[in-house]
Image (cartoon, rainbow, N blue to C red; front, side):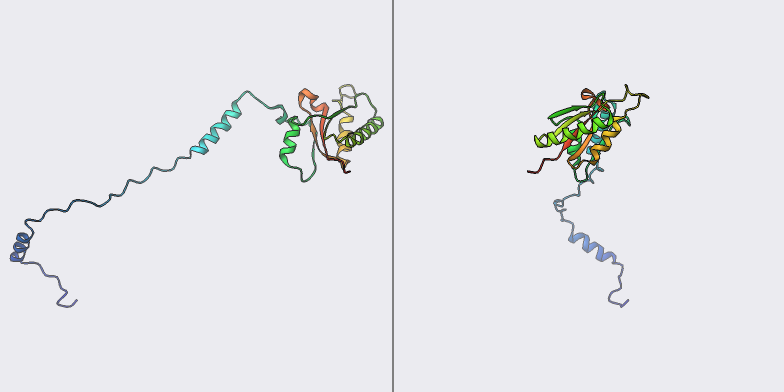
Amino acid sequence: MSKQHKQHEPSDEEKALFRSAVADAQPLPQKRILPRPPPPPPHPRLSEEDEARVLEDMLSDYIDPAELETGEELFYCRAGLQHSVLRKLRRGHYAIGAELDLHGMRVAEARQALSAFLQTTLAQQIKTVRIIHGKGNGSLNKQPVLKGKVNNWLRQRIEVLAFCSARPVDGGTGAVYVLLRRARR
């Protein structure tokens, strides 16, 4: 360090002179804005509300039968069909335009009846139908025969967009709702 930048200790005379010079000084009023305290940590209110709603739904008594799966349901959806359309079909929101009951028919007779039924409904521009195939309670070994056949037959038909087992009030797993595409004119 150079000599001129060296700090020196003020003498007693310099200290007294400084004190007499600032003796009348008054502090300036404080106009500086004090920093506000930090905000509290974020509270995940919406997440907690969502979790509470889910918990309430889990513990509620209401169960939509259309949402239950027992493993006996038939379900098919052609690629490209919106999930909301299928959900509405499962819940029975579409008006049933026609119905076919295959109870008591033999396999060949049921296949012919189904084919004729679908041709007729397409010609009549009917969009949603119900096909009752039964639960197989009357068959020889209490296993549904027509249910499996209807499942395969409907999947092969180009006019079928989707199908699913009906709501309990409409036959449950003994019937299907079928959504058909519009016939080309």
